[in-house]
Image (tube, rainbow, N blue to C red; front, side):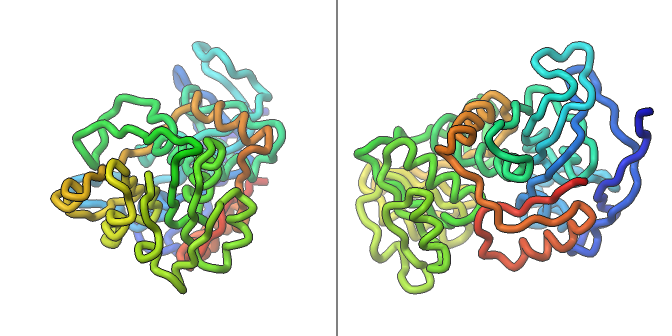
Length: 336
């Protein structure tokens, strides 16, 4: 007999981790083009706590309207429970993973069941479990769309020009700032897969981890300012961004590029004077790109690092862990 209710995490108000409530809600039903997924694991990402906080991190004019209560989350791995009549390519029982409806905030992934557009999903790589698969979509797609292939024609909210990845190869030097985190550790691996010389910036505690991922050099930012020692770079992927992102402009050779993942601040006149490009984009759901990433995950070419796991009912604790920072890889919620 089909279940009518499920457990989920919902927000009835914005605030700290304490506003995350574990409660009973109706099981959603797939609409045309959608798949119902029985969730096994959920990836925890920065937009989850941005939503919880009320999107205060975003400029007021960019904040979408959020109707409460709302179930946060975008990244899932699970098993197909039902498919709409018009969906081809997925069947009941298939193991899938995906980032749902992003850049919106209606993914509703913190739950035992979730409905997802079939186009947002891909087959889960058989060689990894649901926990590792759930850690991959947003972080992996962000690194993929910044570094390898944008994969869509939607305009970016951050700039008028279309983002163009820099061709990567054996003659390319890439610095990844925030290299041990979710996007950063994928960036290191994807750049290395393409043959680039990779310099990783992180705290010294992550040095061994980053070398294992393929980093050729590791700069411990607690001991050395990366902008004082890195020179003649082709590309900086700055996963930290913010008001200090501009410091990497002078580490680039003429013709180089700075890709701030999060609201990087810089002086356009300085960038023009140095002959470098600053470019950003907004990651978007993309099932076909996840299928490509899945092949790398399945082959062991790319790995998902798991910082910690928490049961769905302990989502508050997961957000407390995220707030402490210095995350190595991804935080994941497990669903019984």
